[in-house]
Image 1 (cartoon, rainbow, N blue to C red):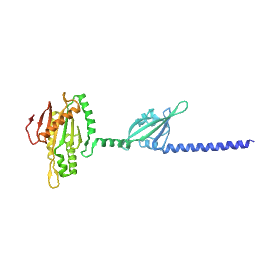
Image 2 (cartoon, rainbow, N blue to C red):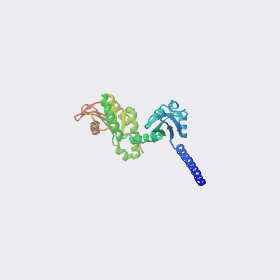
Image 3 (cartoon, rainbow, N blue to C red):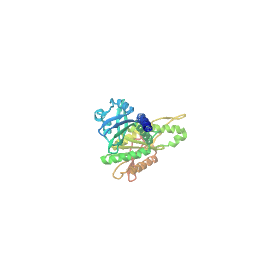
Image 4 (cartoon, rainbow, N blue to C red):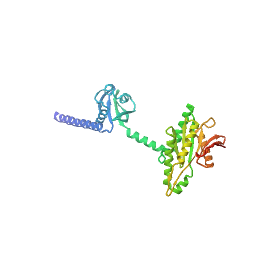
Amino acid sequence: IFLPFSCFLVVVAIWRYDFLETKAKARNEAFESNRDALVLVSVQNKIIDYNLKAGKLFEKLNIRLAEGQMDEILKDAPGFLESFRSNGDMTIRALIDKQERIFEISTQKIDSLSASSGALKIICDATEAYDLNKSLEYQAMMDSLSGLYNRRAFMQKSEEIRMITDENDRSLHLLMMDLDHFKMVNDQYGHQMGDRVIATIGSVLKEAFQLDALIARLGGEEFAVLLSGWDHDEVIRKAELFLKDFAGHPFAGKDESFHVTVSIGIAQKSKAVQSLEEMIQMADRALYQAKDQGRNRLLVYGGQGAADIIPAPAQSKHIEV
């Protein structure tokens, strides 16, 4: 009578044992095969389990990961310790093999029916992703031909600089530039030569105004330079030197060498000219007047339609109109 029932219990026990073994294997496979480092911590701030990738990661930090009190084990990794104590997600930086790595650490709480049982810390090395995003952002803001910022980046960064000069009461100068007769260069020597001219002016601009200037190619043959905190006379002197240097740079054509010049319009922030849009309009107006006056020169906007014309570097006298 009891034999069939006993056999049934034995079968159930075997099935249940196999089921639990399969469940344990599945858990182990999921835990160890995860591409991220996993660390299981208790509510008492103890490390109670971790996968192989977590162990190898902390070995690179000269930390032997083990079951035990978290504060003691991670005392030499304050960034990781802080993130493990936190109940939220964090991004930290750590030096591994003399290179800075970026880690995103997320927290997945493990709750029982009555209370929290701890948390699973998921550590993802996001360095490559951050570098890629940084590279894409850089490319989106740069003009590849000239090596300068593009229009989008210039408008964004120049407004930030303008706001800072307002707060610090610093001077602000805007130089709008345009290559003279650039269409003739493309028509006569080809677009490849035109590209070479664009690349050259980018290099000369960076060399002339150094790193404390915001320099951009706004499009085509149009360029802009924003100078914060510069003395007015120094702005004029640098602009004159740039005109002279670029005009003296030879380009080799098919049968002869040729030179390309630049016209510049300059506007300065003042009580009458405050916004970036106003400065661009005033500098553009000075630029077009410089073109009308014969090119290869710079003109400083003086307000009320008047301007100070500074002729080409080869000339020395100062003309007012």
